[in-house]
Image (cartoon, rainbow, N blue to C red; front, side, top):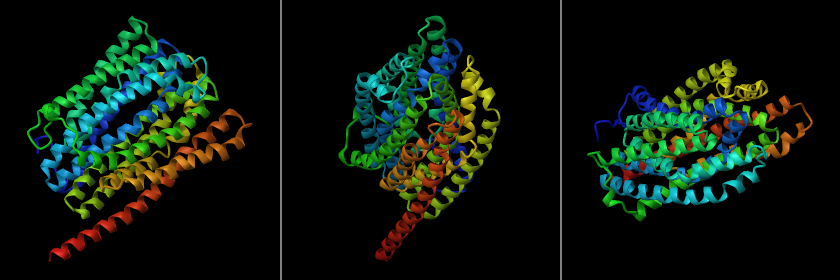
Length: 462
């Protein structure tokens, strides 16, 4: 392996997982600053309507993109398992299949996003005062979606190879570029949301280029050779088998969030502004906790590839414990300082800050539960399971949330705004707890099956 790689199949795991996770955590936080910079700058210079315009696109953008981002998860898992099994030729084929798949996915998303973004926003009931800017932001963003897609595929491969530092360095540089361009486009050229969208995609193209260069300079089985790019059937089918259910799961999450966003839109632009700012702050917390999902996925993948099932239990214990501790501490701190944090985004509406603070009280305090859910989802995928986490999420998250919105939530239609908002936001922690419980049960069943299968193989060889 390359010098930057981590041996994921030998303990002790706490120190290795923390050293592996911290760069992922910092990388995710930097990636999130792209959208944060968008919201902060438009909030400071353009007003709360522009904040609502950018925020209104988040759930819809994630819905469209997550269908294909699942393939990057499939690429990472298949690389990790092949490395754990010592199949270097297979690693080469997977990597050289994944990058063309990323390019085709990006081009397809460009067409869909540019042509239908306005229609999708109308379906969500986006208010008239927000619609023009939201539609413009989405069209520009999807016009350059190839950059973020290629970056995420490449970063997923690097992490599966044990290198989490390179994506951090690249995204740090891209983040600086993004903030500089945001400032220039908004304050000098006065391009409003169009400027922040353009700054985001240009900086992401830079990050994508750097990731591809890093892969091309490796000296191990993970080396990328652009001249040898080719879609191999067997690796592609394996990436699809793992990645498509992951993408569907992400899309179903996003569908439930789109429906939630539609409910939020019904409160008006002031409420939407507070919701958007709160959701962006929550994103920093989610990214921090979700980094343990990435670690669980790749550590599990390599150990399953090496048939080290005893190590899988240790990985689960370490990752779940870390996610719970980090989620509990940061969630409480974020709630305590919610109003000053929201004031960074919103400068012209005390009412919007109040609604944003209300959302954070309902969502971030129990945030450690989503950490358990995400870690267990990563473990299941690292073990090669694809359908079970997808089905659990569809039922536990999407099904439950839709049922809540269409049956329980309407009972509060005539209640005060604050009570209606609380009844809407409590849907989050309730769905996380249900899903995490089901995933843990699925993990126990799958682990026993794989251990029994290994025991039968050993007995047959003897």
